[in-house]
Image 1 (cartoon, rainbow, N blue to C red):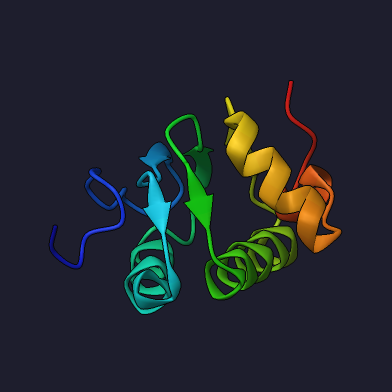
Image 2: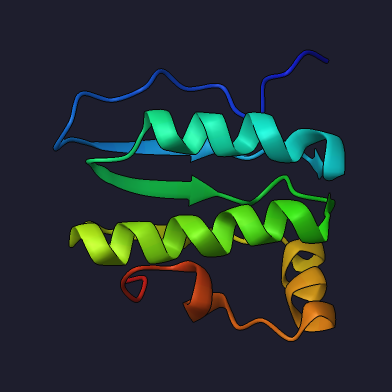
Amino acid sequence: MGNETAQAAAPASGTSSTFHLESRLTVQHAPALLDSLRMRRGGDLTLDASSVVTISTPCMQVLLAAGESWRRDGRRLQIMDPSSDFLMDLEHLGIGLEALQSQEST
């Protein structure tokens, strides 16, 4: 596994894309996750969390910051198909799914 945290090309500004989160997002993945999300800023983004088995607090902080950035930009950031492990890690950290999203999922 390299420094990739997802398999998706960066979208052109103003477009919509889906970003597939890796199954294990440890503290070592936080910088690459941050870089990958920064490259996608400017368009609507869906984070596919269906494969996430574990997510560290630093990676969760990156996702929280992304949600806030997308809100400020008036863009849509949503979590798609969160795995039960992803939801459990959120619960353990006392974070609601809505805190990560710029708008509610449909």
